[in-house]
Length: 123
Image 1 (cartoon, rainbow, N blue to C red):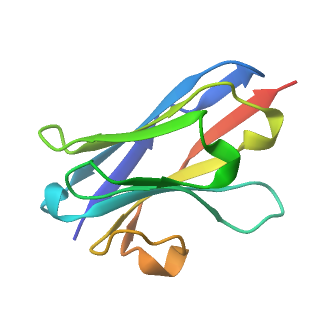
Image 2 (image 1 turned 180 degrees about the horizontal axis):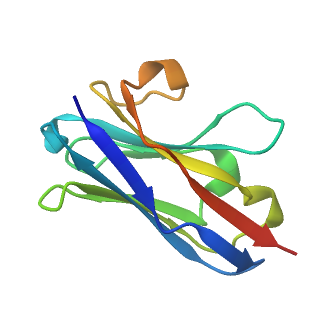
C-alpha cells in the first residue's frame, strides 16, 4: 500500500509560480510511474502530467506544455510539479497518483492517490 501526501499549493497571482510536491511512503517508489491530475469546481478530474519510473519520459496535457514541469527524486520518494506562468484556469485541487504502468491519462489507470492540494490563481 502506497501513501501519497501532496504539499505546496496556495494562492498566487496570474503569471506566478508554485511547486507542488508529493511524498510517497509504504511502497517501492521507483517502481511506480507517477502522475498529476487536477479537478476544478464542477468539473471532472483532468490529467495534467505523468513521468516514468526513471524520470526520462514525461507527458503533458497540451494546456500546460511549456509552463509545467514534472520531475521526481527517487532517493527522496518524491515527485514534483513545477508550475510557471500560472493562469486563473489552472485553479483546481491538484492530486498526485501512482501507477504500475507508464503513460496513463485516465484516473482509472492509477492505483494510489493523495488527498489533494488546492491551487488558486487570481487574475
